[in-house]
Length: 332
Image 1 (tube, helix red, strand yellow):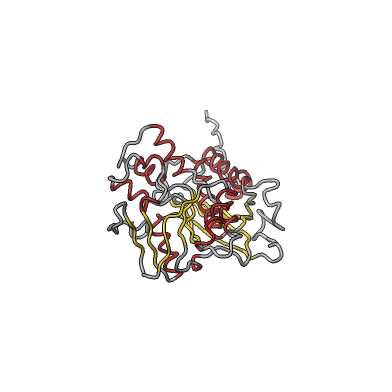
Image 2 (cartoon, rainbow, N blue to C red; image 1 turned 60 degrees about the horizontal axis):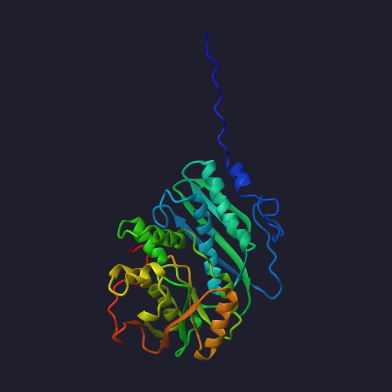
């Protein structure tokens, strides 16, 4: 007697996954044509420039393979929104490309929920992308609108104040906790891991700063010293910052100033996704007003100068010897 074989359920296709997890009835309301064709058709508002940025997150390099999928969906979009914040641009559309080692529908449901929850907050429509099989890899291209007042890295001038938003070092300290370099108490760990896994893009601040006559800006993804260094290079200037003026995450305060780990997290840790920007001294009141409008604190940390390089001044007024300069994808 032969036993009937039960047919195994068919694996969902690439198009099934896109339809189930990444297509929404009103998901492309701001696009002429969105998900479902060979390309999206987008209409930029009159007088606007298109701002475009792409970021890739790779498992084991940018996040732990067992990362919470909801938080990962949030962060995958947040790091791209942060790029538009640094340009003073309004987010409009995004594409998402996924390489997945397997089809895990529960993981995809949580990931897409985290992605779309943040997309809805910033009125971003997902208008296309791709899925394939492979090592876990997430890539977003974000598109937004700005005008000739876009914030740029090459706009810093000698005498400008240097500012940062929010506070720094919490995300890097959270990563150090996960890697066993330090053990944080429960409250500090929760706060730092939230900063690491669910960064808050400073879009409103970028838009407010774009109303000022001249601002140079960058988002802090690889560490304050590394990212400020990009402004200095593009603007062909130098800078001096005061260590005691750099706003520290509350979990770092108990460790500073004597801890080398805390100083590294503060200056070179990365994953903060705050804004670092430069503006004329006379615009300090306007900078503070922009922070108030955006609902985020802003802190003056130094001054742009004519001498090449970036110097960090300690509490005693002497220049510190800093070895770490931030994250480099091929050096770290």
